[in-house]
Image (cartoon, rainbow, N blue to C red; front, side):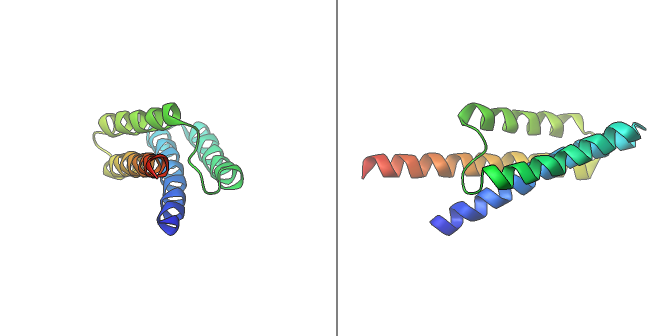
Length: 113
């Protein structure tokens, strides 16, 4: 179970970073090159921050996880013509949701024992 938790933690961090990179791609496709480069740089800085301070634990709490899931779903809805962005956002939302539910399952299991 511990290896699954570590795997989901890494996958969650990568998917959130990919989601932010997809937002950068939306800016690039709309002709906002400077804004897309700033967003791309910030996404990699955010990934380093997540890996350094949140190694084997989720980013934030339940409210932050719910916010990430909602933002990813909104990104999926708003990206009508860009299939890579819509796929990235829905995958990030699903991965974050699975990780959130797994953490909740581990907490419930720990309390019951």
